[in-house]
Length: 242
Image (cartoon, rainbow, N blue to C red; front, side, top):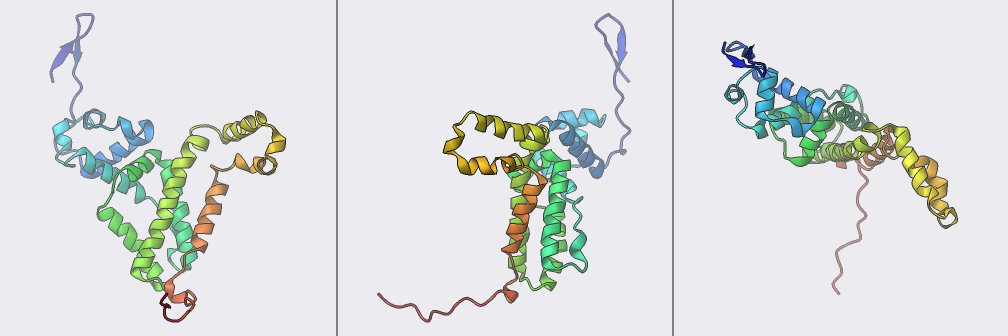
């Protein structure tokens, strides 16, 4: 171990590097996810992560080829935590509702991951495994493979967008502060010109809440159904020439 000279002329021992072979890809990704959770995705860099792991930067490149690959791995590591309780024995509505609720819970626990998913295409083995877990049960419920995939991603995109909306409004600050901002903004207006808003004002402060998420998720799922159970489209006969 080498040492460097401190500001008072003394010698400060250099920080020891971890033993060779004591890292793994899983440990690197877990440390990167923890860093993103604590300080945001902007704080993640290979040198910063190397210092956190007491390793050299080049050592990390033995486990991930680039920062982009690391970001993908971090996102997939978080998504792997999603649990959908309705997969065994639940109907397709329960599966899709459970998928949305589980994804929101994980994205709120790992808020930086929402930014990763919104900002880049994350495609890898973990994504395919998660998709397969959902497509099988939906297929048994009557969904064709393509429409099942569209339903899964409709819920994912809604949930991702909602979490990105929700986080600065009712997670980075108390929900009461968000509600107060609505009341304070409305108080500066002539109330008689906005009777509809006045009636809805008590609810407007809850637009970034679990209640609002559930309202939108249920409305979305209500509009999805397997084509096998959908009513036939009306037959208006062959198109008429004009």
